[in-house]
Image (cartoon, rainbow, N blue to C red; front, side):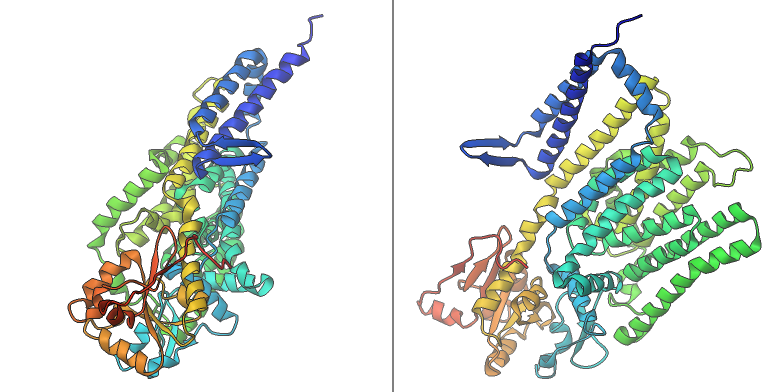
Length: 608
C-alpha cells in the first residue's frame, strides 16, 4: 500500500497559496488608497509600496505551486471543473466591497450642479412637488431675475418667483424614500446600495449567458471599474440608472417581463434620454416568451407586462414635465436642438473610445468577438443561443453609445459615465470570450491563466481609479461643506452671495440666498451690488479659485469690482480654495486700511 502524502507539506503549500493571495489583495488595496500607516503602541507599520507586496505574493504563490507539485496540478484541474461553484460568493464579495467603498469613501456632499440638484430635489419631494419659491425674484431690478436666483441644478418655473429642478425625478424619488425612512442623511445611501445591486445583477446576467464563473469575473471587474467607482462615491444618477437597466436586462433574459418592465420604467424616470433602450428590452422579453411558449397569448402577455410599467412611468413623467416645464415633452435641460447636434458625433466618438480604452483597457473590446466565440444551443433547445444573446448585448451597448454621440461634448474623462450602462454588458461578453479562450490551454493552466488575467485587469482598474483621484473625492468635495459652514457661521443672515459653482451648496449648508453671476449682465454688477446694499441684503462674491479669472473676464471691463484687486475676507477649503470677497472692503483696502483674510486650515468643517 503506497504511503499517504505527509500532511505537513500539504498544509504548507496551502498556507503559502493563501498568504500569496492575501499579499496580492493587500497590494491592490495599497495601490488604490496610497498605502496605510498603523501604530500599535511604539510599533509603527507603514505600507506604501504595492509592487513589493505584489512581487512577494507572486513569489509565495510560485513556491506553493512548486511545493505542492502533483497535488497542486490535480487541484487546479479540479478547480476548472468546479469553477462555477464559487461564482456567487465572488460576486457577493464584490458587491459587498462596492457597498463598503460607496459608504466609506462617499462624498456625502450636495456639491456642484448634479449632486446638489438631486439631493435638494429629493428633500423637496418630501414636502410635495419639487417647486421652490424665491421671493427676491420679484424685487430685483435686473433682467433674468429668476435665472440669476436659480442655483446650479435649478431653473425658473412656469410661475414668477418659482424655481424648479433641472434633473429627472427617478433618483430624487428614491432618495426621498430613503430620507423618509432613515432621515436626511439617508439620501447618500441610495447610490452605494444600488451600486452593490449593479454588481450583483452583472453576475446574474453573466451567469445566464456564460456561467457563474464568467458572471463573477464580470461582476468583479464592474466593481473596480474606474468610472463606476468615480460615480459610486457621488450622489449622482449614473450608477442607479445602470442598476435599473441591468435589472431590466436580467428580467428579459430570465423570462420575467414584469421585472424587465419595472427596471426599464425606473431607468426611464432616472435618465429619460435612454428611453429607446426600453424598446430593445421589450423586444427581448417578447422573443423569450416566443421561444418558451410559442403561442400568441404568451407573447401578448409578455409584451403587456413589460409595457405597463413603462406606460405608467411615461405618463407620470409627462405629467410632471407639464407641471414644471409646460409640456409633457419638455425637460429641465432645455430644447433638444440646443443639446444635440450631428456635428458632435465625430468629437464624441473619438473621446468616448479613447476614454474607454484608457480606463477599461482594450480587453473590453474582446467582447465584440462574443457572437463568434460562443456556441449555439442545439436545435429545439428552448433558450436563446449564446451568439443571439451576444448580438443582443452588443446591440444594447451600441444603442447606449448612439444616445450620446450627438450630445454636447465634454472634455473630462469622467463623462464616460454616460456610457456606464453599457460597460457591465461589455465586461460580461469579454469575460465569456476569455473563458472560451481558456479552453484552448491545458486543463491545469486554465484557472491560473484566467485568474491572472482577471486579477491583473482588476489591479489596473483600481490603480487607474486611484490615479484619477476617485478615492480622494470626499476630500475634494469637502470644500462645499467648508464654504457653507463659514457662510452660516460668519455672514449676516440676510446676505446674498454672488456665485456659480457654490450657488447650491451655499444655500443648503450656509442657509444664504445666492445669485448666479453668470446670469448678470456684464455691465450690471455695480447696480446689483448697490441694490442689495440699499435693501440691507449684504452682498458677497463667493468664488472658487479657478472661477476668479472667469469673474474678471466677465466684469472687469465695466466695473472696478470685477478686478477682484483686494483681499478676500475668508479663504476656505483644500486643495480647491473658495474665497469670500466683501465689495465694501475694496475702498478701504485702496485707502490703505488692512483687510484680514480668515483661513480655514482644515479640508472641511461641519460634515453632515
